[in-house]
Length: 304
Ligand SMILES: [Zn+2]
Image 1 (cartoon, rainbow, N blue to C red):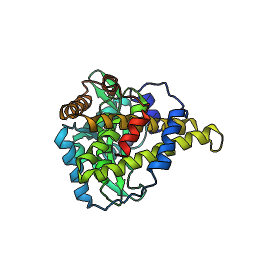
Image 2 (tube, rainbow, N blue to C red; image 1 turned 90 degrees about the vertical axis):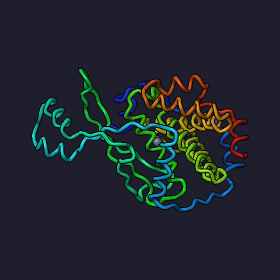
Image 3 (cartoon, rainbow, N blue to C red; image 1 turned 60 degrees about the horizontal axis):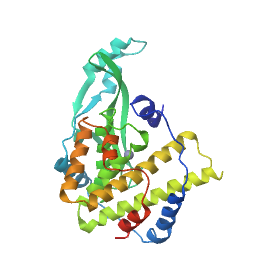
Image 4 (cartoon, rainbow, N blue to C red; image 1 turned 30 degrees about the vertical axis):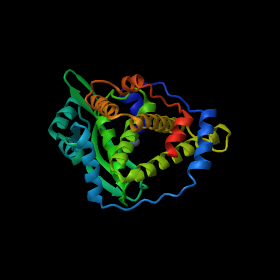
């Protein structure tokens, strides 16, 4: 089962999935991005790997209290249970012996040339976990993969993956699958903004995300006109990223233009989501954050 299906069916997200469609508003936005905005080149400077992680960690420490992550030592479990069939209760007992909780910053980071500089991936394996009287599927976190070439965008990308760890370890924190990437992208942008440099790093990420919006739109229209057929799962995945990216930009524009108290409020509300005191959708509904773009507002923000 893919990660996405697991998120939809196994981790408490809503089951109803939507196939994304192109719309007039999206066409207009992509038209603006492609012709007026993306024509400017971007340069991304290298950064020391250790320093990149440190910057990401300091950003999260400054605003949030992160929760420890559950980790089952998979190799120890394999040794413990050996070969052959075992009962569920044997497996649960073995997990108990091989489990531990680690701080998210202790999660292994692996640099790989499989990823480009804007990409990262949080790897987890699902186990059945006993929680009081019930057992349920719970991710055991393994590692974070990052691009082997560390740059000034590595801290925000690392923050993105650590944000996923906080949401995934708190099942039900995101109710709707289309919002899975919303907070990771939002905090990625806030981290870039926080890094200063006259928003140079932020603008690089905004450019990357704008490029992604055009890429997703192209995938959808190519599917619609039959040029390139995608599977249902690929379409759902594209729709998830498109929705999350636009919602994250909407939330970020509110944050960016907000007063210090608005900024503080938004970050405090995100802490409540990490703490399991509210889910993401309660928060976005209160702020009227949706995945529909006000093209004028976004254009004004991007060309500032
Ligand atoms: Zn992500």
